[in-house]
Amino acid sequence: MAISSARSVNGNTKSAIAKQIYADMLNSDQQFTRKDVIARFVSEAGLTAAGAATYYFNITKKSKSVEAELPTEPTDEAELPTEPTQAKTRRSRK
Image (cartoon, rainbow, N blue to C red; front, side):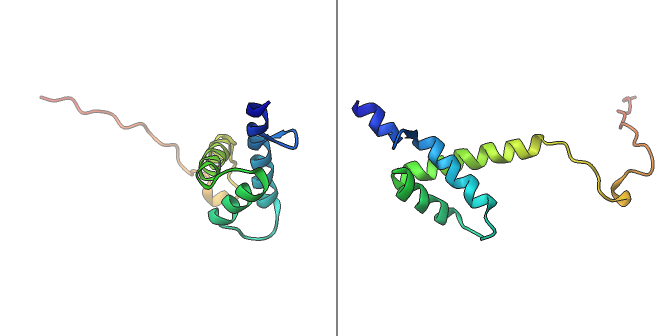
């Protein structure tokens, strides 16, 4: 039982709690810093400061990779290419 209690708080995993805290903070209208997020991870998820910093890094890393994979569409006609681009070719050596 000691292992499961170390990995969870009130039946939820620390990871799930940290992800929920981060999502709640992102959805709020207030601005926050990394320090604010880590403080909430420590107080609400029961993490150490070092563990909270690691969770913060991993959650934001995953968040950024998900955002990077989302397709983006140009919203302004000025962003659309006007002429087709040509691939660069290598010149042959003589």
